[in-house]
Amino acid sequence: MDWVARTAQLRQWTRSGVRAPHKPLLFLYALSRFQQAADDELRYSAVEEDLRRLLTEYGPGNRTTPAYPFHHLVSDGVWEVRTERGPGSPGTGVRELRATGAAGRLTPELRAALRRAPSLLGRMARVLLDLNFPPSLHAELCEAVGLELEEAGTGLLPAARRQRDRRMREVVLTAYAYQCAFCGYDGRIGSVPVGLEAAHVRWWAFDGPDDVENGLCLCSLHHKLFDKGVLGLGDGHGDGHGDGHGDGHRILVSQSFVGRSTAAREHVVALAGRPVIGPQPGVRPIAAAHRSWHTSEVFHGSPRPATTA
Image (cartoon, rainbow, N blue to C red; front, side):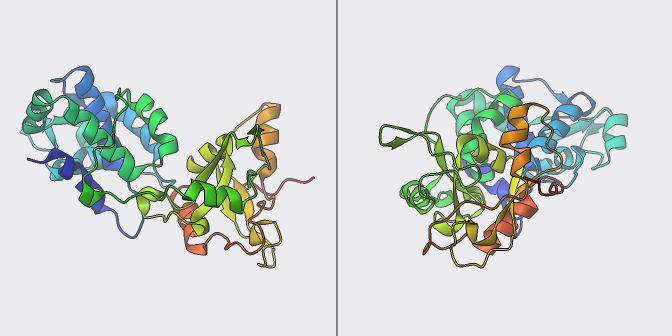
């Protein structure tokens, strides 16, 4: 059994770029619990809140019960569910899972494979991360599920792997004149930019291309907030001719974001409605399809009204 290949196929249940990380999140959580206590079952009623928190923080904006992946992951051959009545899941109903004492764990075959080859767990986890989440979230997601991974290659199969274009960072940073498109930060140490990153608007994990029409130069803070759905891109009133203000794009700030400090107000809340800085004249702006994907699949909730100067 090629468990890495089977892990890579979990993502095939998504359609047309719609984010549905429910199974990958449960699978990462289960791998973490196996790492901590190989033979423990995960009783649904005991892990429901953990799974709900993961779905809220790392899933799309639409609400989904943790019962959904708890039941449906069984069909992928890596997870089994038992109730007080015996083997088999009672379905996707929260009430049924609680009432029957439903508990799940990795299948016996997978647990045996993980014991024979301990490095397999890390390779499977990295496939789940690479195929479902941007790199900016990998470390904190591992921390959130309690997973410890050694620094290593991704373990992706050649057939499941696209090669990243190493030139994208330089192309995007140049297009935005080495300043954050949201706040204008342009720090350097000598001649080397520091704290500036090339963000994918449509995530690479969801077929986002490595090109300037899918890229934003963002500082580290705003890159993380953009990937977490706190910040987004909306239409503005630009003329579409590269006037230095993002070709009409304006910054969205989620109403779900709460920050009481002066720093939170100045660096996040105050961005609502501001024009995006750049790209430079002559550079292709962000493609509408990529912006729409981010708005529907990543941005959380409704945008705040524009702040007044």
